[in-house]
Image (cartoon, rainbow, N blue to C red):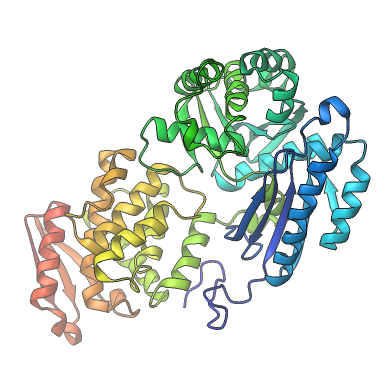
Length: 511
């Protein structure tokens, strides 16, 4: 098998990548304590286990200077369970990161020593600048070629960094976390907005290039993004790489801040109980940040300090790997009948585009490669559900390095590959992309339907088959020893494909 990034399968690992050693990050924040176990330490991180406990360690730290005993006890109880999970999952290394609440607390040494004893690993108490740095790396890891400003909003602090050419600068930390703001403003989101405005006067936002993007990281901002999707009836409930214009988000944040003190904001019942009271304070912070930086839009990132920390440990060669292609190849290895067939499919579809003169940019070629890798991941399902189940894996899965139009494009291809060009399985996602992308998805999806009857998803056949053009006719050329492939089923698939691709006629030729 040709390997993209050295991914192979282990039949004894119960659906896991061969040789993968789990790695974990225990993130001790001001609002929650979270353990994430990843399948392996790679460019594309796949969570094996993800659990948080809302302990509110940062509650009252700004006033008392100490972690409250009850909150510490709750956090330590959760960490005991996380230690057991790490042992049971045979995690190779657990990285423990503590942020604002712990670093600001006078009694942090007592808490840290207890955590280290439970986890049998060192706790790294990050400075504000370090937290800003790793948050920036998290955004870079998940959003290709991001340039702009990154903000990571936690319970105790807000970290800001400017990013250009994949490098972050001017990392700053501010005591503007949502729990701290709730305490400092006596529970008033509008008063919190005034506090934010005052404290950000001399921030890196003044150095941000006007009209660039702002990347928003953190649980409260993720909750805000999900709420926006629900209220605005957005068809894809996926926070990663969700983009909203600054103008629209400012209006939305204003609605939440203004309504929360009266009757509660719209959609509050859709927000988790641990975040519900904090969302208005997150909205207040985001609104003031967008105003101060004069950004064109906000892009939400589900990847932050945890992923940025692991990304920063990779060497430059590994950092340069495309996470979308690596993640798609892992799915291909784990779920396809023959992962090597994807390589043939990449060549086969590329040859058609070249012969027919269809122009393909680098991003379009990248997405076509990913579509080929994912084309056979649904074969185990019942035929009636292969399309819908594959769409779920593609559009709503943990793949990173792809925006929402890209997810919609891939989902449409997979839907058509399984259900035909009349498939409505991905219809709700169509509006996320352009008409040109939708048509290209239809062409590639129906082309897949030509390929599979000839190969049964096995490699070695497609490299011997090619397309040719004869005026307005499309020819599928078979070698003489494969002439028996010319049957009614293949002819029907080819004619359907020709109609979708805009050819008047199509025929099978044996040479």
